[in-house]
Image 1 (cartoon, protein in one colour):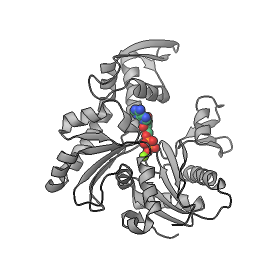
Image 2: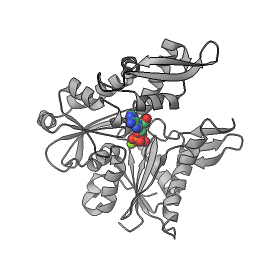
Image 3: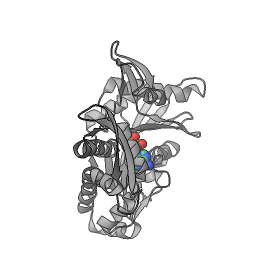
Length: 338
Ligand code: ADP
Ligand code: MG
């Protein structure tokens, strides 16, 4: 591919852009601040995320991909255009790049079309899409072209993708709309139900990252939570045990485990045997949840490894396709023209 061509991980939580021959040039939250009084975009990415909770009422933060696919096409297209321009501006002249963008494996053809259209609207000359678990597996260094089976679990903000890969293809996959965001929401719900305390999703996410753990004996034993009393509306602090926080996070974790089991069930026995020896690789921000690897190992009886750079795996795998397009075009899902 020509210089300036881009690999994009259009994630529900974070968007990363890699430029051919240059590396990852952009890594920003997939957030857009919209002025609802004029219906115009005020800020994008890190700047928009900083405005959350600080901006006047008529400015609303929007996560256009929240559930893993394009929930709001116009805002997604604006966001992508902004990110692509930001990256290309740095190398001077703007000539339409070829763009490889990854999409969730459970995406419908209409949704896939919307992603492609958004990339064309951002100025692409040609758009290709690659399935997210394939990108994650390549980025995590799994031998996807070998006859032996590999399994990758990519846990992002909005979706979890589970896939078994062999001989350059996806043998079995499951995509569920349960991932990091659902864990945050589960914490919010639990704290409200058990402590009559209101906390925001950002607070819940911070709690998950600083204290949360998926397996006994792997996290801090205690945490303080600051919130607002449901009854009085006044600020109140509570203490929560590490075990209790784990119980709060359990429903979404159980659903993720069910998706992994369902994928293993559909995996041909020969490949399942490979997984027992080579193990499963975790990618995405959710891979960083304390004790998740131990929990999966304990429940599945299969070794589980965390990718070296879980938050970058998908963009790095997509970048590999950009760098070696001719050899790897087979793994590209589609390259239809407008
Ligand atoms: P996406 O691909 O959907 O944009 P990412 O792979 O960037 O998502 O992961 C974002 C998710 O990972 C968020 O839900 C975030 O809370 C979670 N996350 C990031 N770091 C950690 C951590 N250290 N522990 C637990 N969860 C984390
Ligand atoms: Mg992702």
